[in-house]
Image: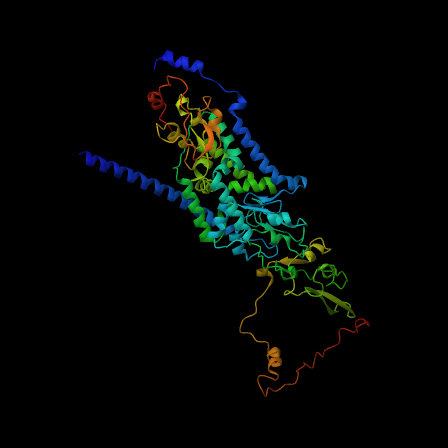
Length: 266
Length: 309
């Protein structure tokens, strides 16, 4: 009798325990679902939010950054800021900067990276010229003063890697027919994404902008081979006996020179 | 015990002054403010003593401190930290494990001020204790946050963690983070007494785990003097920890050894009979009653009040 009673008590206790555990587990599962969904949405880093130098790829960065703000504190130019809850920006508490507000001045000793206790900013980055925060893209050729044939050149002049990351490419000015256009041209392999050019652009809205790699860059297909490079490598044409056909120019519209330096339109 | 006897006990009962009844509370507020001031001296006055936030900081350029819960999330999400981070965690874990894990909760964490205030309002309004999750719930929440971190490879909980958000907000700029703080406050006032710090917060759970063997303890040394006024149970944010020590008989340890105890000292504050005091975990001494005839405990009124909860 007393044995039965005891067993019943244990059963009741076990039921209670299992019930409690199941309830808590369900509550946690609901919370976990919300967190996961929220997390997935928060991953969408806006294009104008640039991570500090050395930041791991975004997916890894979000698992490594403890949102402490030490990089922000050690940035001597107050470039970096922490994302605040509610602003449409990067994940809450993570560091970023907006180039048009305050660009990265590319300190030689990279104090933000040194300060990072977790390595979310990769400590193997020791030369700031190797940083890869994004790529500048001359995004609006219609309003860029250089494209209009003027000599603004500001983005080119402020570039810390002048003549490497931004070069001026001379093109004929087809509007006047006799002048040159100096096209500011970003060399993506050299550009660190510091944003000094975006900051310096004299237009009310910058014509050159730093964008994340994923938006700014294409990727060449792995199987593509550039014939001229292959030819140079091999020292001779790879397909022998290719006949060089004469250029076929339509008779009715012969090419007229549109550009005579210093002479104006013909 | 006759009613005449009870009356006489009440009449003779000492009553401490306000300062004495709030000394550890005031001291804690002082420490909390001081901690915050260390972080704010830099941005506000250019005096860089501590940089960063409570999740990870650097003091005077030499002392790194990193929160173990944050680091745990980073670890399970698949990232191995830099040496400074590891040293920082080691110092924090070591210090709290030795001195008292949940000291963090009541002496450092800025959320403590919020939930203490919430509890004060809750008591003033005379509200029922409301939803009381099981004692293990915080460990479930902790496990949940770590699972989500592992599953998503990201510190997902940090998108909603009101504790880190509050401190970061105070030091770097609040944004909309005040809303999550208000939510915690309202939750503690209207939904669940001691709900956040006492039942849910996964950071507190981690510090609780560090509290298992730590030295600093509150002891109900003078438990023979207790006259069951229940003041300590009323103010204690984790009041299940008191009973074993206070109601212990004979050789039962007077030490509050439960890992949930935050060593806030509130029980020491409010006890007019000086039952409690801070001590270390090896001090199991009891103060022998000075009166020849110790006050007899009559369990009946306690039961009538709903037991020792």
